[in-house]
Each structure stands twice: as C-alpha cells, then as structure tokens.
Length: 312
Length: 289
Image 1 (tube, rainbow over the protein chains, first blue to last red):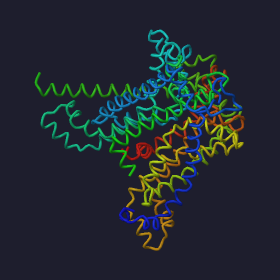
Image 2: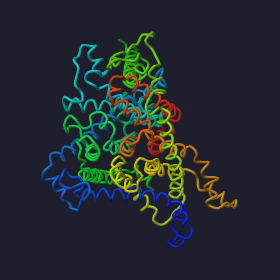
Image 3: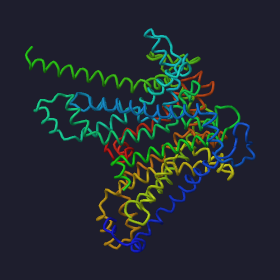
Image 4: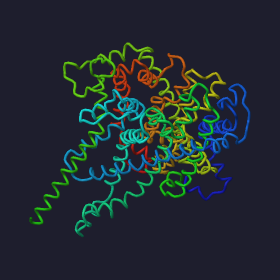
C-alpha cells in the first residue's frame, strides 16, 4: 500500500511478506514453463541438434556460436530476408491498421444516422476466432476455386495466382487479410478515444472558423497521439510475432518472400521443410526473434509514458 | 450560389460520402462472413464449385453440411468439442486463479523486489508463445507427457498468465485501499479481505481473464498440432484444420464453412455481448472501449 512506501526494508518484509506466497504459484509456472524453455532454446541454438545432417537426432553436442556464425557467413541472404520481411510485415500492417482505424473512427465520430449499426457490423470480424477465419481466407485466395478470383472474373478481371505467383500478390493477400482481422479493433479503440474529447473544443474551433480538416489536425490528432503511439507500438510487437496469418495463408511463400522469423522457426522444427527437422536452426531463429523483440520493447518502455502507468 | 446554400450542399456531400465509406467498410467486414454462412448452407458441392455461389436460390439451401459436421465426422464432433472444453476449461480455471493471486500481490502489496518481479515477468513473456512449442516438445516427451491431456493442460494454463496478471493488477489498482482497510478494521485478515471483499469487486476483470485463458487453447493449433498424435485427443481446431487440408475439404468446402460457423458462434456471441470489457482489457486499460 502506498503509505508504506517510505518504510525500511525490514518493516516492509515483515508486513508485506504474504505477497511472496501469492506470487509463488505464478513464479513456479513462469520458471518451469517460460524461463527454463527459453534457456533450453538458447542452449539448443548452440548445439548441432538436427542441423541437416551435421548433427544427429540421438546425439548432439555443444558447438558454441557455430550456428550463428554459419548463418551470418553462409546464409546471410536468408537471415536478411527474415529480418526484412518481419519488419515489413509488422510495419506495413500497423501503418494500415492506423490509417484505416483513424479514418473510419473519424467518419463514425460525427452525428450520422445508423451509426450504431455501422459500428456493430464493422466490429464483427474481430469477434470471430482468427484461426478459423484465416483458414477460410486461405481458401478464398485460392487460384482455381477461390471466391476472390470468382468475384474478379465476374467483373471481367483475370484470375490472379495470389499465393504462388509473385511476392507482391502474396503480400497483398496477407495485408488485406490481416487488415480485415484487425481494423475493427483499431476503429473502435480510436472511436472511444475520440468520443472522450471535450465537445466544447470543437465548438470553440468552429466559431473561430476552423474547418473539418484543421479541427482534425489541431484537436483530434494531438488528443489521440498517446493512444496512437501506445496502440501502434503494441500492435507492432504483436504483429511481429503473429504466427497464424502467414502460416495458414502463404506459409512464407512463394519461396522465402513472405517468411518471417516465427514461421521459419516453426517450419524448421516441425514441418514443411522436408523430413529432417532442423532443431538448432529453429532455436537460433527463435533467439534472434526474441532479441529483436527485447530491444524494441526496451525502446517502447523508455520512450513511452503510457507503459509506465501499468508498470508502476 | 449563396454561401449558406453552399454550406448546406457541402454538408450533404459530406454526409453522403460518410455513408459511402461506411457501407464500403461494412461490405469488406461482412463479405467473408457472408461467404462462410452462404457456403455452409449450399447444396453439397462437387470440387469446390460452391466457392462461386454467392446468391443461392432458396431451393438450393440445405443444412446437409451441418448434419455431416455434427454427426458424420471421424473423430466425431462431440469428441472434438469435449476435448476442447477439457483443455480450455481447465486452462481457464487455473489461469484465472494464477491471474487473481498475481494481480492481488502486485497491486496491494509493496514488497521488496516488486519492480524487479514485474520486469522479470514482462521480459520472459516477450518470448513468442508459438516458439515455446520447440523446447516444450523435448521437455514433455522426456516426461512422457506427449499425447496426454495433462501434457497440453500444463502449457495452456501458463499461456495468458502474465497478460491476465497485469490486467487484474490494473483493475485492482483502481479499487481504493480504503475498502481493504475497512475490511481489516472489521477484523478480517488480509487473505480473508482478498477472498471476501476484493475478489467480488473484481468479477468483471476476472471474467475477462478467464475468457482470455479459455480462448487461447480453444483456437490453438501450433501446440496441439505437435503434441497430439492420437485421434481421440483431437480438439476442434485440429478438426477444422484437418477437414480443410485433406481432400475431403478441398472437395467439400461446405464442411469447412459449416464447421467454422458452429465453432465460432459461441465465441462471436460472447465477444459482441462483452465487447466493452474485452476492448478495455486488450488495451490494458489505456483505452476504455
């Protein structure tokens, strides 16, 4: 409790020790199910565990940073592609989320007939479990039988081989799908923030002759800035490791063109890349992903006042 | 034109443009959902042809796909549903208890090491959950827990614990200390005050924490795909993935979409009813939706 903050360590220990009892279960869970597996992953990334014939599945050895050095010297194009794709994916998605979310929220934030109906309908995609709708979206982008090509054909546009022909088409499919999944959430969050802006600010501005656009720029945007920064940064961190859209729709293809760290790592260990699992490579990509996320988060905490109030 | 008239025209144009934008957004939002529902109700198709039926005539509407999903799947739908409920239910129960204790300790105690602890849980929660599957696989196979209920319930329970813990902490921060102090003055111990006074005040956020812990396993594929090998442990998520990826699915999109509707419906209703709480929670209280 706040009034105890100035007390000595011994006093605090005597009075606040029950906290440790309450935290015991979660500490055990986090040590066994998070800290140990993370350490284990770092260890595997420094072994030759299933490195495509170089180590065997039954006996593997500690080889230090060999995997990392090998990746940088011999597979730098893959590593660079993964870094580039991960940032492009997260950055591109967040830019679109903010753009669409802010745009629709501003349109909804005016007196308009049927507003609550629009709001409810727009919110629907968000209510569906993403895993399920992503499976359906994967089918919708299909070349031969997909409904999207079906609709395009009916207005006289030729079918596009969305997922297999070119990186651009595959990225477009991914971005559109992910915007569909996420724009409802961003729209409603921004709308809620806009509705909290005091109305008399706008009245005063319009008496002074400010138009819609300059009201948006001078009042709405500054007021929204903290929310935009917070939601945008959280969205970036989430999207950077958002596994299912890419795994279920392009699975990194065509080639490596839409592969990000998390899908590459999962596939190296459990799938798609042929019969022999590349556990140490998968672990190495996990570690690289983790390191990038840590650096980004430190920047977020350091730069943002908003995180401070729930870290307090 | 007189200025006043021009202003009226501008206002009308703005209103029309607003409706056009919103109708476009709604069409985008609803199209896949409409497609799912229509396809699930269409006549059992041959080789994906239903994918092109967007305006079905009333005579071709059938619930045959739903019949197949509910009664003729192997493993059958009831098994999948039961397994999903076992995994999600136990994960929700354990996750809820962990989140409540964590939130209470972090919110109402000023113990030495509190800040360090928050940074510690934040740091390790940054490791992507999907990638924990790799070390889990080796840990759990050496314990003989692969392909068992327990083997999935354990990692599932830990899934949302850090996020939910911070969620509960934030909520408890907003409950004045006076309330707890009044309970102490009335002769309750701190533990009693927690269970009898604070927990009832926290029902909304605890409900959200339970829901988040429930939804994770309900839609998990990454872990279940690796951990479950026998059919009788399959979950709904594995069921729909399998229908979708086998020939059965490619030839019969009606089944995939009917399964999608049945599996989503309870979640959609829950989301729409409790949207305010969920949005407030997902933004960690930074925005009250």
